[in-house]
Length: 584
Image (cartoon, rainbow, N blue to C red; front, side, top):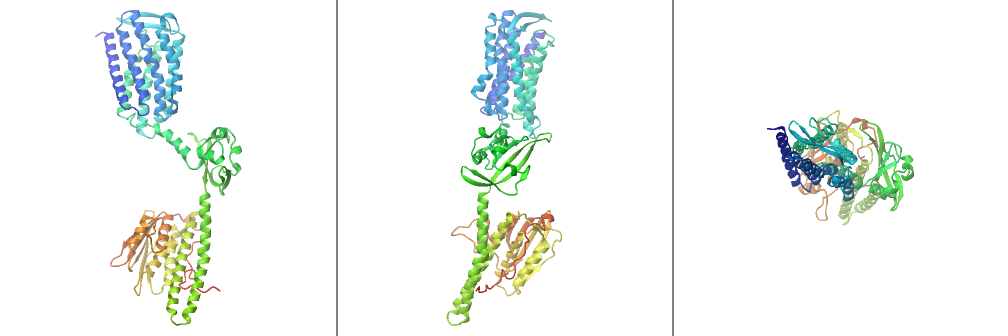
């Protein structure tokens, strides 16, 4: 077989590989990048097909004709490559008609000059046949526009490759494999064309680029099949990050290392009553209120007040430093979190705490006192007076539990405080034992070096107290134990009473109450909320032969926070006394 025939077979194989890849890409439409990839592969196949025709031609005119026809595929490839890279990497805002039209100016002019080459020397200054080793090739001297097109082609090739380079080091193996395959498929014809332009090809006038498309076709086939090029693409990544930034509820402003605003989201423009166009590029101190109080990094110690279109708003400000890949500081993200609802909630809690701490107890004391006076007088009203006293005590106890719940919620906005498990269990159990001398409260061996969130104190008190209160036996028995395993503390409260109603447990598991389905009190809600604040779980089981077993599991916390915040103490005897006293 002659050298020409061998070359012809290689070119035909290249066409076959290219068309196969084109069909695979065509089937993936409208996946991001599919249509431009089809155009690019079709351009390569076009170039290879008419290069084969050029090889078979024997006259100068015929070879020149097929050479000119190849320009259609030549100029489509770089434009399609750029459009593919933009869509594939999520930069599809550049894949618009106006940008495609701009990119196509040079290719259209090139094709037009190729079609009218007999009338000018802009694309080629001369053409001749060269015979070497029985192979006749066409050698053409490039004119000024030829070098413009060549330069333009390489510029577009580079522009399209830059976005892909970022995925070569991707943590996702598929994206990494896709990018490497695409770059190999692009570099192979580049190298062969550069060798041709610099005259490094053994056969004068023979451009091996169409042959190199065989390597491109194999690489693209690998990307399409093995790495699922168009089935899994990184196109959403870039847009998703931008979408998260734009649509996040917190106002976010990006400031560069020179304190100029370089980006902001929609919430920030609404907060500041401005537009991105008016704010970007300006010094941050001119746009952001109280910018001098914004920390270099971290969160402000006090709220920042902003007077905007919707009135005065209060914000917590958090600053996050931005560094480049070399660890150099390049800017900051300043996030404003609206705390108006939090402040209103805090105000409501403070008012509710005051009402529960003083007003309800004072009023129930008055009711109890007068009912006690009526009972002392004797007569037929004494029995009713005792009922009033019982209800007054129940209201006072409920108010006390509600106050404890408010105190628990207040701890959320304060630094959590750690207490030793042994101290918490011992003190809380002893307090209940003092108030219920007929009960038998057993505390098993406790871990000595484990700490938990102090917010569990009221929860444990309520669990032990409820186990005693609802036990109708003459000597209620409660067992309290604690163990530590794998960084978590397991507190168990077991009793021999009637057990916790399944209905009560269902309300807690559902997490909400309705007018028809609600719990009988606040004790179990207090337990559930306190355990939740401590990042724990609570489970209810039946005891054998009777009673219930409540298991609370919470993470161990560092002992470093043992002395921070307000001290958490067990409720005093006076705070939980069974009988309110008359307030004068």
